[in-house]
Image 1 (tube, rainbow, N blue to C red):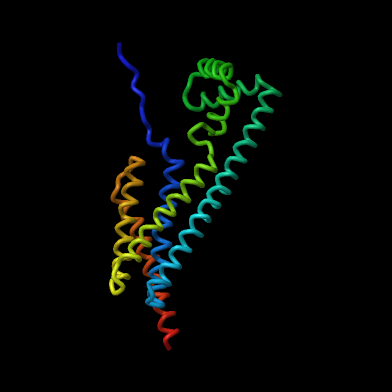
Image 2: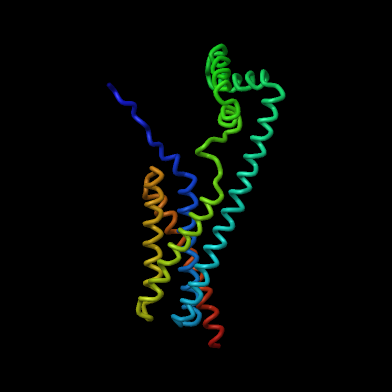
Length: 233
């Protein structure tokens, strides 16, 4: 007997993958940039580590709060749309069948078959059918605020820990190049992993992440150097 093959589409990962990659990317870039700016200004490892730890904690909390608020707003919008659709189903069930059939007709289904499919699906679960095909809300796309907030905070902290470890262990004269090069390597690896997990080519995302990371670190290093020179003067 032939077994059914269950396809594993990588689109299922987009919800948590976006939050995870964004969190880790921000953690590496912001913390490395902050450390480089402080070192360029003061030349003191202690100051850089304090700033880096503060940036890690504040950034992780900010990422969690931002994701939670953003995704909660999306969830509220989805719940409001579902409530409206539930009311419409109760008020005029026949019209809702015709509306769903029109959607299937617009996708290329024959009119009679579209009507039959709409009736069968609404008999099984009317709200789910309209949520999926009329509103575009499904189990995969549904917003999950807690999952997004936790993923963002955890991955931000993980990303931020990388340049902090380099700052703590590297020789003081080599702090700037070690943190800068190390952060770029971490960013490139992160971009490649994110692309791989999503089933996309790895080179372009890796280079894109590294470019913007290098730009941010160069900017903060330059600003820190200017403030250091001004303070000495």
